[in-house]
Image 1 (cartoon, helix red, strand yellow):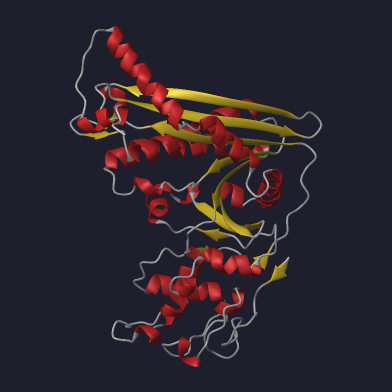
Image 2 (image 1 turned 90 degrees about the vertical axis):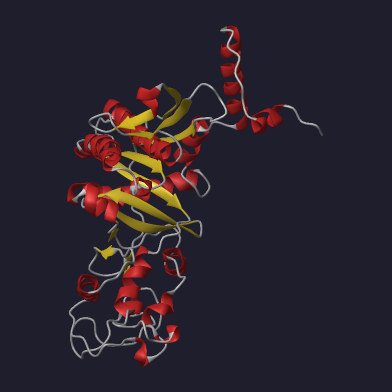
Length: 398
């Protein structure tokens, strides 16, 4: 474990001593270019973490900025994997409501894989299709049934995330036997897309359903179950935004953009920093998401933490719930098992690859499903009109 503190940075002593800017850029090797890059006068600080939190609390910053959980910025190498372990991964795909069809329905397919390694290796691959049809299944109603939100588009994506986690919880409850088990999902544990929905929608999909599945998985943590999500080549800037807060000038609206401290990191993503300083297979320090989705709806019990991982010279973001991140054994095990999965998948977790293959609804599947609906309507003697656009897809002139 090596420290990144002090690499290529200018400024004052972050551990006390002479006042001045925190040696924050030394964390990730980004040197300040001018003494005037830190404005607002000398600041006495004990640690760079305290500066970030102090300025976060005092300022009116709208950036999504991570909390630094580790005392120092660290590089962590993977530990040895256990002889026997299991990986369970899920993924989903769906056919949304077709506005051209007289039958309003949604098809959701959940792919699940169970890979067991060690003394008794095995592989189980499942595909579980679900159909939603009728008003009661295709809408989310408020408590009085006076308002409804159609289960389509963005909202269907949220429902799919809920069902993926439910299938994962179901499978984990069946297989949790004390064998170290990595439970993987593709994407984020943070339901970003729920923002902007009606409160009754958030109550039902997020608080009553999604968090319920998290609770079920949490109860299995004493059986060495590790929940993690994998985001390949993330477009996030949570860590960079924390550094922006440190560089932010108060009352900078009248300044030239080149004089604004935060402009130094404009356009930089977290992956741009970590790809330079994380050796292959190593992970970064641990951070905590401060997303308003988490702070408003998840609460501290279901808080989401994350670290960055260098996989085959590509950065991935690994998200973990609080109970996994706060357990050092489970945290380190998540690291080593994900590395092993990526090695087996030549740079991407093989379990997620295979769960995707089980879940995907390809073009042929979609066409066959539509033909099946048409045949069922014809057998019932039901004629229906469709749009000119839909007919044009069936009969090509050229």
